[in-house]
Image (cartoon, rainbow, N blue to C red):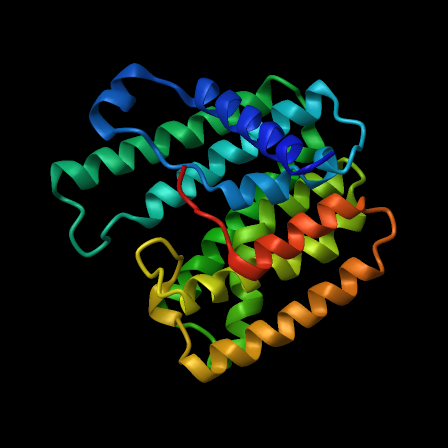
Length: 243
């Protein structure tokens, strides 16, 4: 599959996700919710690499996309003052996406995935609270926790459907992408902007993580070269997060 094929697959997934979460009142009052294209791309790595992709996997991937949207919306809420109409609409929109997540999971049903995702979501929320209120002192520990927050549901998806060989790529891609956003001063879109490191630390860790990712990609002989090239391109420049 070439770059256009990757783009078409991700676009198709995003279109299906928009259809799954669509609710006219939510759309009218809360607006067109953003979808994180980076997360969609990394979630779909097995599909993009030509792995067998069943209807069950597709439904599960949509469910994970919905909970990612719920996380992203809720992360924009000002917890110190959530009384405005706009803030309350964001709460309701996030709750709606969370409800769609569980509705999609219930339609499968894969009880192992339901349980594992429920546990992962609990851990993600705990880690987010820690990062907001009492983050680790070292940047290394912060990056590890950020990676766990961003990739937690995707890793459970990989574990459930025997795509574990992709874990080594995703677990390093998310902290790297977070650092790239920090370097680009994209503080409006990045998670945990208050944790953005200084310039020298950012450059040092980006170089370290890129070298690590390149090494992992070189040893991942199951990956088709166009996908390797796309992953390298993504982590060299980043892509527009909001679609």
